Length: 350
Image (tube, rainbow, N blue to C red; front, side, top):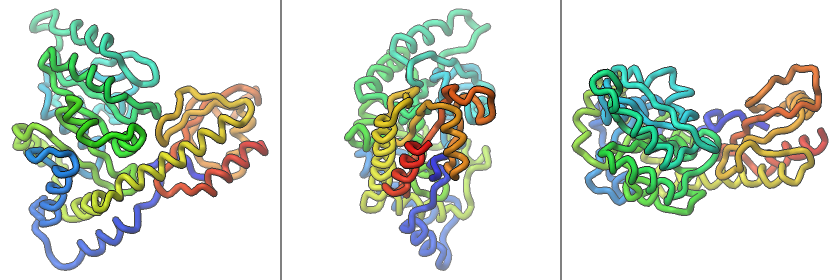
């Protein structure tokens, strides 16, 4: 009953097989391997973007930070949600890699910000001349850090605001696959056709060992990104092991199949919890990440039975057994119906 994170799940066997095949013989280093040529073709075909510049990094933090450094300047500010991963979970890496650009945090419900909030934040900068930060990139997360989704219309509305100020837009797509499945759209519709300039296309949370794709839909950013990736110590010498993972990820729609499995498990879990007394959600579940809230004593009993998940508010230890505490439950591609049902049975018993 392991719901701690989709980072915690296993690597898909097809990816492991691809790594084993890639381990045979010799291959050119630093992304000059033939497998990387295949990845570029696969990504460009998938996104219907024949001119896109495509790169791989080993972590989402590197992908996000190096993209923002390429799109922005040290004296600018990045507009993002106050819940954004680049703010809450990357140890100031965006600030470090951009050379000092700050983040302007936008409020909003369910970890999303509105076009009005974005316009207000943008208008609040470049008002103090040389003394204040200049307007920089806009960054949105899809799926958000609270398991919610921007609709295609919402993405387009945000990018339209950004474009009206000539600002580029980055999408943190660590769970991009889960969002594509949930919205029933194409990768192109949720990226460049909606106004996204650069994308972190996640794989690690969706069955890969450790690789994320960086996609610039405008290839003029390619050379600067290459320099920043090398200077930032994120250019792998034995790059073929990144390439092998991502090529297998895209082969025959494996990336979609795994996201469907994760979302299906998340839906099963959400329906089961909604049928149980005394449960509520901080945010309506829309993909594979849930934030249910229930009594401390239920949390304690579940953990005693071996359930593994993160507490989102409060502590397991406390004086009031009836105090409502939130949890974060995340389903990955390998989550089975039986595992979800075992957890729901434990919940009902508790």
